[in-house]
Length: 141
Picture (cartoon, rainbow, N blue to C red):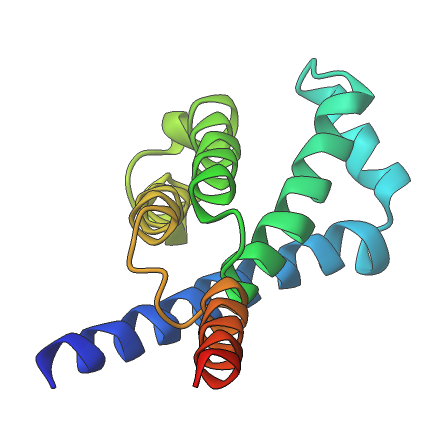
């Protein structure tokens, strides 16, 4: 029972953090517009490809967390863009997010890594593995 409760809590965390990244991708692509995001990144001295990379990692990484696919890769990439935001934007503002600090991006980076290397029990991959195992057992019976 303890393992299944932990697996459910990891699933809940993946859904919440994944949805948070999807919301940020939506903000970049739809609400603000990717051209405005590219311009904002340019003001920081970053190339357009960095804006696109960040938005795509948020989109695909957030979806990967939700679905439970490619978790280590998603966790590392999401953490990397958050660490980039920490050093390039938020570090000089101090710790607290209310002051524009790095608190929020640090938590997202840590959560992304933890979830990327967490239990893959409730994932799309596990669902297919379970289904194919049952099918093989039925064929063998």
